[in-house]
Image (cartoon, rainbow, N blue to C red; front, side, top):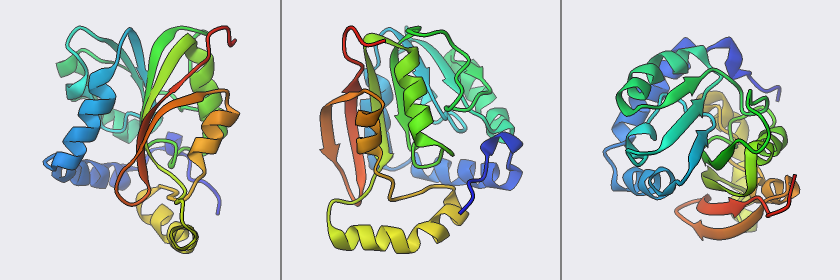
Length: 205
């Protein structure tokens, strides 16, 4: 299936994303993930694929946070949250980040690598903009560990992608390692969700 580039803008998808997100934000599950991922950042922070900005309230008040999002319709909805929480919002895809090498201490990714057109390129870019020793804090949908889960993911992926612009069975953890990250912490949550920390090794370029 051909990917649908977010850079063209998707008005109705963005509106639906915002409605679903507001409803989901009331759940303890969502609050816990955002608190653990966004709430634990240090140093200069980059969030990729920020959507409409649901992570923004969870960043520590003193954080210097830059967020990117390629879809202009998403950016419109994220702008009020960015202003409220002091986040610098930039329109850019995760695969082509407009920042110098080694310019961030932390990169945040929540539900992004299942949606980008090219997850390998997005991870390579995250690795590039992190300083040596910097960390990637993530919560993502990944390929299931059990054969029946993987079969279900392969079967339902085309429908899921059309509805939610999300590929639910990507081998994201393998892609992280392929981009040069070392996974230091990993917890499997419900279904095929994971939360964790990956590090760019000291001395890596």
